[in-house]
Length: 390
Image (cartoon, rainbow, N blue to C red; front, side, top):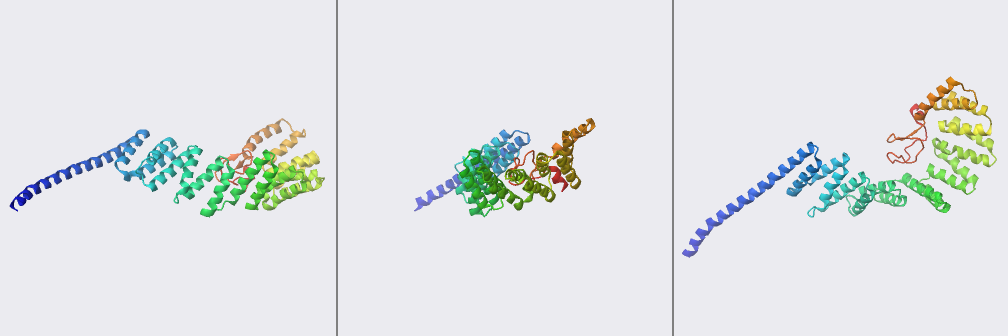
């Protein structure tokens, strides 16, 4: 008993000393790691401020290795690079995070979502599609992934896939996309018409009108298809329906409708339709259509009178340029008038464009989808001069 107590008294101080020493080693190691983290962090900031982003990325990656709690720092840095257009650097950061074996599942999904946005920003649509498709099994990211896929399929002109994704968004997120889906079917109908597959085109147009009964584009294409099949009366009915849906779009079909009426032996009805439409819904494009038909079907004097009357009711630089052109074609122009016409033409070309109501992108031709911001139905069917005068 006395021997046991002696060994106990000897061992206890040794154990205490060993514990104290090991605690000191651990503390020094933690302090070293803690010191290394801030040093790497500040080194990264210094590189970033000195326009050395690649070295900054390396430093911040070292921070994450030392302190996993700095994952949010990487997401913020990656977003910064993407906004600046430095997509390759954003991809590098998010790829590093995604490749970490110890990354929590939630952070891994977020890294994959950010990587998909990087690829989308950089125009790498196939890689972006793969990233967002993998996110469809993640409840927190599913809706955003579907929205991104819808955008990608529109950019790739994969209209069938776009329809599927739009319907899924409607089911899962309650987002109505009737107008968009109708356009997707119209795109497929135009593709079928180009391939001379009239039955397929008819099927897509029927679906477009089922989805959106007031789809002006589908009504116009349905008229085109009927005319192509020789059913003039049916074509006339579709094109007249455009004016009932939205009179602003009459200029897009006025020429076709007038020509169809003329082909059916109803020229007087065609001219009356054009004059009445111009009175009720004046526009530069409708004036051009009406002037061309009156000039061809009546005489130059009647065509010039039409221009003069319309200019009195709705003065415009574009209308005056048309009148000067008509006078020159009739042989009534002289040198000063021609010089004036040349000057007006230069200005008129700037005003004779269409403008997107969402992003302001200007185009010489009418578009159903803006080439700039990819919005649908954002182009009013009126020229800039008319829009600015409203």
